[in-house]
Amino acid sequence: MLYVLGVLAFALALVISIGLHELGHMIPAKKFGGKVTQYFVGFGPTVWSTQRGETEYGIKAIPLGGYVKIVGMLPPGGDDLADEVTTDADGNTVTKVRKSNTGMFAQLISDARAAEWETITAADSDRLFYKMPWWKKVIVMAGGPTVNLVIAFVLFLLIFGLYGVRSQEVDAGRPVVDEVSTCLLPYAESGRACTTSDNKTPAYLAGLKPGDTITAFGGQEITSWSQLRRLIRSNGDEKTALTYERDGQSITKQITTTVQARPTSANDETLTQVGFLGISPATHTVVTHGGPLFTLEQMGYMTKDSVVALAQLPVKVWGVGKAIVGVEPRAADSPISIVGGGRIAGEVSSQSDFPVAEKLAFLASLAAGFNLFIGLFNFVPLLPLDGGHIASALWEALRRGFARLFGRPDPGHVDAAKLLPVAYVVASALLVMGVVLIVGDLVVPVQMPAG
Image: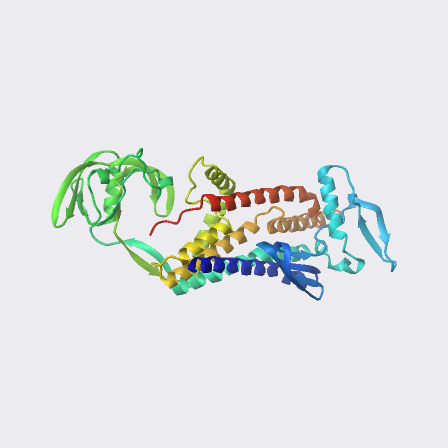
């Protein structure tokens, strides 16, 4: 039951986020005089809808997104006009779009224009989206992903302010061994199970055990973990003396550290070849609470990581694809779909040894993380993403501004329809990646870390 509740809570958080995202588009579009004919959460068959004024509001069966239909996203296009213009029953001039063309992409563009203009009448002439000033277009299209970023900020603010940030700090004084690594694993494979082909760590071979207190290394008295860590790293693969206390007895052994590629520091993931022993020190939990500035600082770090993740997304998805067919194990840091997010939410909710506050904080952070990523992702300047429309509006402002500056004829509105081939390619790639991640989350799900 707790598992199901966790999944439902995550799904509800996503549906609400999607609905608010679309409101972020719809509200400014209406404020600027645009005509919005549809507001839907989800895709596929309509589950429920109602007409309010000129806008139909509703929910569709597949909650994997949503959309707002803003009239006049595409201009008629000079080269796509058939018979140039026609006149309606009231004598008004109405632009018509040719419904046939030469070439696959040209036909796609022409069909898109035709579909866009089928319901547009002369009365809509001053309410078309493409006729809005560029800055209004930017506000309308940026409204959706900005809402996601605001949701992420509010959730993180609540988490940091009420629950706090849990971090582990090494106990002061002589380091006490908390964990002994059994086998030598590359840093990128940290956390996977040892196999018979993996070499043993120097600490395991030396017989170190949890609870041992390190008192000397290489003849130097040890007073802190940072000192011991520095000496181990500088030892390379040399033989040296290690002294530790166990059950009140002092034991000295000759060990040979190995060399491994490890992060330079806790804040620098750059790998450097250093000496390695294979122990972790005892730590204690430190709780840090923060307000708006702390939240913005933490989101800055998350944004940096998210941008890197976006750049690596195709490669990471390719790795998930290889894991599906059994070529390689799935990486612990691979991206997940909303199916994977729901599974993780369910697993955490069903953990009997997790306090309720910790479960709520985790679910909130999961929803906040998805909103942050979705918000940033939608700012990518490629159609059909919101960032593609923002880029088109900014390009329109730039070229019309240059035309005014140099006294040239106004180049007019940017024709987003000409970028539809790019939009179809991008949409197809996103669809494929989405399917791969969903299948991966069902077949080879990311494993939750133990403990």
